[in-house]
Image (cartoon, rainbow, N blue to C red; front, side, top):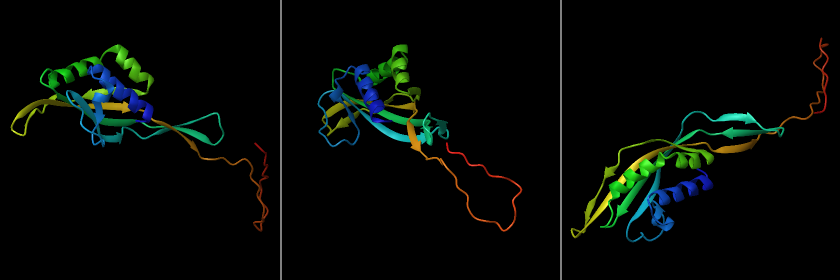
Length: 175
């Protein structure tokens, strides 16, 4: 996803989980782990759904390339004792199906196409502290677009001789 799509998705996850934006982090980021309840987003894999499509623009020699990508995004919630991580992710999935959320994502060329079951991955830490954790994989479709300046030929000038007379006449015209 591009930076704008990434930011929109991050902020939406924070909003739907009822967390402050700084409580939703990216996996492997170089920063301290937030205290209390927090979530992380990890983009696990990305692949082309189908081959990119090309369309002309109104500029000569410039094409618009439209990608069709599928992204597997893991969201994991680490909850404090007052919250249940599984419940938070169940509610997140329910809220992702709201029409208002679908519309916001659609405007950014993002669609949630599938999600896996919420997994309870709670653990006992240091044999002393139990933490509730849950994880869900969400399949996201997004369509990045890029401009490609392939150039174009404005004039062609043919010179030379084949040694034989050609039965055609070549007319060149400036575009």
